[in-house]
Length: 355
Image (cartoon, rainbow, N blue to C red):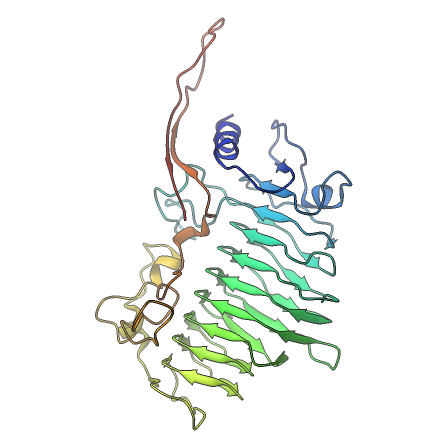
């Protein structure tokens, strides 16, 4: 009942410009439009431009490994929401719910062009290309496994303010695969496998800017890319081919292209990020202290002169816990029981804007 009231009020507060909004909830005893990702996506009544709200649940939403071929908006509740979780510390006071919206493996294919995703936790996701610009946007999500450009032409993919938790972005190789007009800004790549290996980037409009790589053990590969204001906290070398490289910090004794400017190599990441603290959230650990060499070390972005390097810098910084940019309830008090015959009940709630 508590989660149902919470989500219903949130939906009431958010007015969508899309044709119709649908609730997806797999919690036992909750009445919603759908119970699985697969059921919602393939349903003929769910039309291009509709919005799917995935409500908080401890159970992953089943996908049947479906390939999505219609334009949809998909929203969840964020992640790292439980401040008492000893294995993955959450951020307190951001959402009343402590469960995320977790999605199993699926693919995005031709027809999903223009889709938008926010507040979700992805188990695994592959892109299979589109006959025209994909124009997919992923903003404020958690990737728990690889985001893979699997096949075809993938143009116009935007990644902003996501966290890749012990995982990376990759592409298959081959003459039939390309990635272009790629934007990756203000994301976090967290721990051992965190990073980007994109050898299939093509064209001259690819941007990798203001990202934070934190305690990664692997190297990275970027080609044909504008690379600026990043913190490369990875043990492996970063291979940068045919790329513009400006105002980045590197953990390794990095060999840079001759045209690279204002970069710092061989940086101590404990000085850059501060000591790791198991008592705070993963994304909270990536915030830099005022004394960090990354503070004010970035190249001007828009109206921000000398922004901080990393995910929390520049004009559109990373937001803790990836809560979508819609109103949410961060505190809720509901009676545990109601006397028989009572016509009303008192509910106390507190809301915030997450823009």
